[in-house]
Image (cartoon, rainbow, N blue to C red; front, side):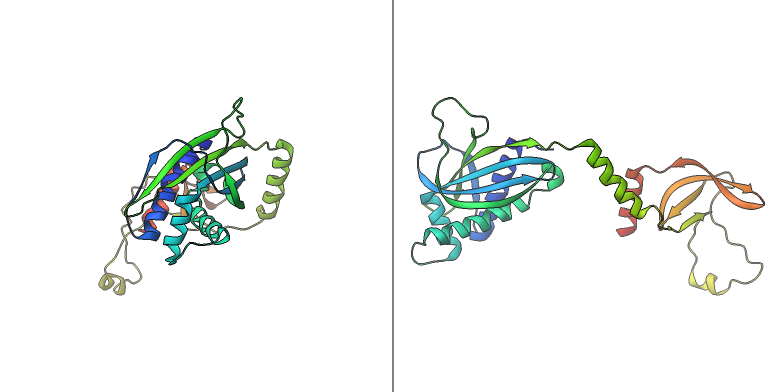
Length: 256
């Protein structure tokens, strides 16, 4: 799970990439010092693992120039048009963050005219300025100055509620039948050999009788074991269970 500052840094990286792609030119970011400018504030709200809000302040000169360039407008745009452009660009950048890495989902809940967060007085952890950056766009006079602030906290989860939710989910799927297959071996045959098969033909599976057989569920190897006789029927005594990593590699190999 990422910290707030890690999310901020990733957001700036993705925002720089998005701006460069939209304007079809090179863009880079650099550390900056917050200036007391008016501008626009886009607010994100966190959920699914963390809670809190992150605010992205865009200084007016760079934000207006960016929105005008993206819209290819011959004249300056209204504040409403600038806010819509900033919301769209910010959403694209935040969407690029994998919520599994970030440890939360972030969505835009507000966008309005605002000012850079104040640093006067005693610092407040909830609103303290965390990162100030300039995004410099090749061929554009005004850099996009942004200041990121806000806070995130790990969401408290009631253990009993979570357990009940898991139980209800499991109850729904526990009676589902899954096909289980025991594979003694596998091989590849030329089409010519396949057409020549008949009663008495022997197929070499390339597996020693001492080797463990594969246990497959839904065509995925989940375990390995040895063949036994149970009440006059064949059975398998499980000797090892395939790890999730091996299952993922097996799936990747089949898809490649």
